Image (cartoon, rainbow, N blue to C red):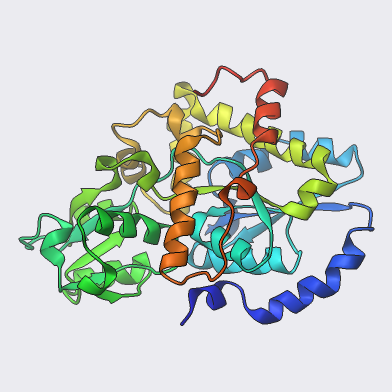
Length: 346
């Protein structure tokens, strides 16, 4: 299956073309923001900073003063990339918090979005093997069965790890499994390795896996990333509203990045089902404030440039994406000034 087709079907483009002419002239009534959401005790809980943005009435009130309604669009973790890309293509959302490869694929298909605020230094990824495995590195898994969820942001991290060891995807028997299915396969002894997220710690806790590598040992641009993206035409037509969304995001990041709020924020994140012990190990050894940096900097630019190059090489996309057109730092810079946060992140 071609991942570009998986994430954006040609039929969706027809709806995009049909609606583009009429939508531009309509007055803005609603701002729609997609974000990862979880079902918790029968209630929908948003992920990370968007939880804080939703609970803080500031953005809702600012938009209401302009006659605009705020609408959150929940996305399940299992299909974030597919869902968000389809919503952007059909003009059913204006902003979204999601990862790198899906956004690159979307832009290569002709649906233009822009990264308008970074999502911190990114999340770590892990290489896990069975507890009795003698493997100590990715080299030891050459020719063996390795699970990786293809087309998701951490595929790029896996590709960078392989490249650093002069290895290629063809050197492994790859199984396209999501983290949950991959963990089950590892537990059952059906695979020899799993490249996954922080759920790796749960596998260790259950004594069905052991971590032999993580991106904490690698350059920052190897981490898995998710940022705030906006539809390019919406941004161009509604710069004031875009600035409000970014300012609200910065306010949430400022609160979450303070050490005195770390315990409370970790508790909020645990509503996703991840134990607090796992969440704390995920950030152990890294500066807490850095996990909330919104800066669009050289590290982030390199990450997306590498992602575009990888997507072309692996034929995830057929058309190049200009990384400088993809990144737009105007709103972060202005937002930091608006909120007196210019010295907050460096």
